[in-house]
Amino acid sequence: MAETIFSKIIKREIPADIVYEDDISLVFKDINPQAPVHLLIIPKKEIATINDISKEDRELIGHLYWLAGELARDMGFAEDGYRTVMNCGENAGQTVFHIHLHLLAGKPLGWPPYTDRMKQA
Image (cartoon, rainbow, N blue to C red; front, side, top):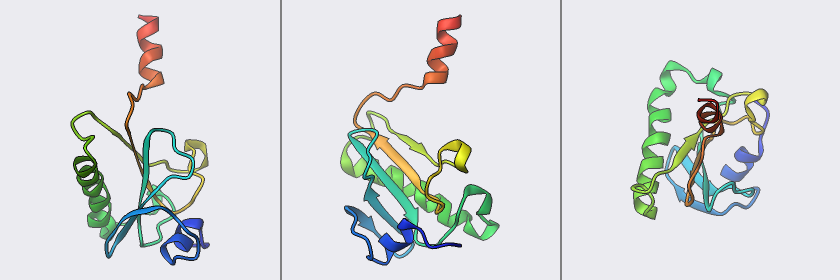
């Protein structure tokens, strides 16, 4: 896999506003936030897309989602609600080919497809 900006952040070659780290994951603030809270939760293991996740990675992926819930509770927005998103491929908006879970919170997060269906009803 080609080196990405995320692998450079993991190696501390590029600065990031890191909010959490453990042996297998790293969490930092998105440089282009789409909500008041916009964190990226990444595995330290390089996996390009969701399509590249192996059976052996199941525990790692579960850890990323578990961590999202822990951060939501610790930061005080779990009860208000939050969104997690992992894009897969260019057509889905993936721009860095190292899987990452977006954690967004701090404002109401609408869902345009749902809103569009409601307008048609």
